[in-house]
Image (cartoon, rainbow, N blue to C red):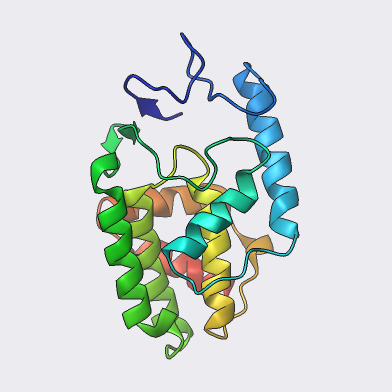
Length: 189
């Protein structure tokens, strides 16, 4: 569960995000969000240049049925497990820098699988620390990773993904240790 202060995204007096169905039970919202974003992930994904605009369009695609603000950068400060994500006033600039770096690295298209895993781990670690959306960051990150991998000529088998290990690797990367994340990415290639 995320922590946010004065959260206009939530129904008053709750931590349940306002949603298109008006669900005010966190369990129901979680179930709906997972089902619909999984369904949307199986559809043709938005085309783009693997840039910030493409990333936001991807989030919009995955969550358009759940949240009115799908694809829009968050406007509140938020944290998880005591770790503060990028302040909203810095999100746009940090995303722009991250995606400029991705473009300068030619979206990792010139890297072998080991180099790709290390570069992708760093990219994901940075993207996760920015946490540009109020909700749906993890699924959007993994879906975007798949797009980057495909463009770079690396097939990824997400069916083999160990979700708890991925969560631990993302937490480690937030603290600066990207090796567990790189190792997990290598295992998916």
